[in-house]
Image (cartoon, rainbow, N blue to C red; front, side, top):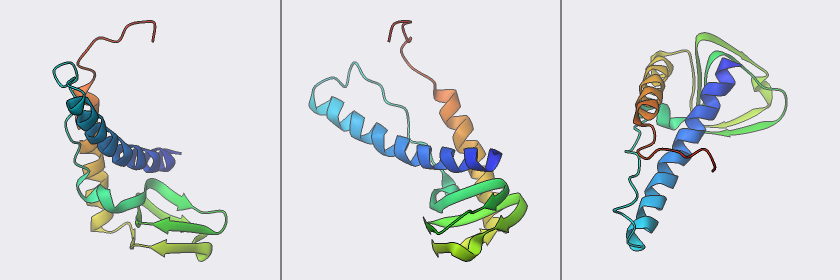
Length: 124
C-alpha cells in the first residue's frame, strides 16, 4: 500500500505543479495577483521521470501501459510485469530509484511546509 501512495503522490505533485502555474497566470490576468499567493514550485528532482515509484515492490494484475520510469526500493520485487508495456526505464531498485525516493521525500516535505497562506474558514 505505501508503494501506491508514493505513485499517487508523484502524479499529484506533477498535476499540482501545472495547476499552480495556470492558476497564477489566470489570477494575474484578472488583476487578482495581490490577493492570491500561489505556492512555490515543488522540484521533484529525479522522481519527475517516474510514473511508478514504490517502496514495497510493484504488482501488476493485467495488461498495463506505463509511460515513464518504474522503480521500487528498498523492496525491489516486481510481479506481473510480463503484461506491461513500458515506455521508459525499469530501474528496479538501482541508484536512480534510491535517489528518486530521496527526492520525493524532499518534495513532499517542501510541499507540506508551505501550507495555506490564508486561513481556511470552517464553511467552505
